[in-house]
Amino acid sequence: MIKVKYFGMLTEITHCSEEQLAFSGTTVEELLKLIVTKHPGLKSLNFQVAQNNDIVDLTAKVNADLIALLPPFAGG
Image (cartoon, rainbow, N blue to C red; front, side, top):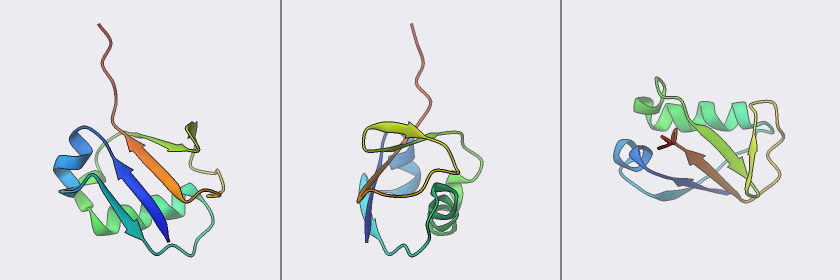
């Protein structure tokens, strides 16, 4: 099981700030496919994925129990 945390507008789309998902894959890309299947509204959005407080790319191996999806941040 992996805990996925959602931030910002992603919580509005998923209707939750975090959830537990059964995941048997290995990469971030595989995990995102699972998440988008459950929450299709995320498909068209750009967001970053953090694992162990580091931003990772789609090819990264999932090696943490907590993944965070971060919406784009505006500077000012």
